Image 1 (tube, rainbow, N blue to C red):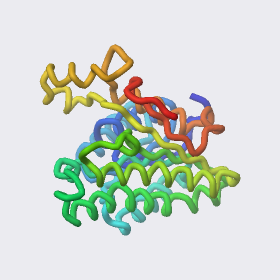
Image 2 (image 1 turned 120 degrees about the horizontal axis):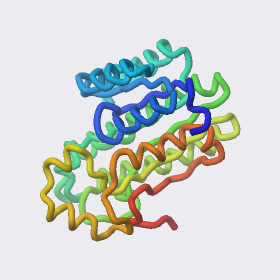
Image 3 (image 1 turned 135 degrees about the vertical axis):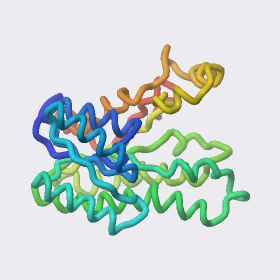
Image 4 (image 1 turned 90 degrees about the vertical axis):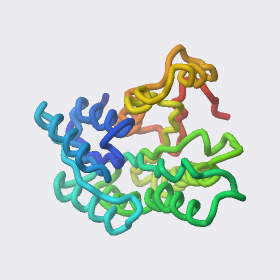
Length: 254
């Protein structure tokens, strides 16, 4: 990957799954990586493992629902690395999504929690990171969305709305600050078979999930990590304001 060597990149939601695979990929490519996560035990274990292998990886605990916690995280990363070249915002509330039914069954708390974590938390992350990037002449931001943003599903309206807003937020950032060296793109993963899902999902369900894909296998966290690494690298410097569907061909862009 072109010129990730020495880049300082903050991965939020980096302790497990897609985030952890991205931390590993970035570290392998020579980037200095900060992990922000509520699950500090696994974040620190990953940081320790990669640092022992020669990487520069550090972990901080933070809460995506608290602006003060977000600001402290970004300030800690800037202080540790001396700059901030990239941000991967990969946090969503996966507990609330389990009770995200429809607009008749959802109460206000479901909407408020979903939008607070998935959307406002992402906005606050970008607000905290962007001034440093502008000051140093540029930087790359990648946000995580979902096909739920455009699919029109009969359930999960709060989640879908939050992810549609993420797509719009990316285009706003690219339009407003692109000529000042800021790139902001979106990855929209398909069904990714993480270790936890692989261990807990029966084979019948896995087979059913694969039927809609144009790929002979399920997605793996490393598939998303590769796309994110490209977008954060200078190889991706002419990609801006885009939403990449990394989903095995389950859906196509217009």
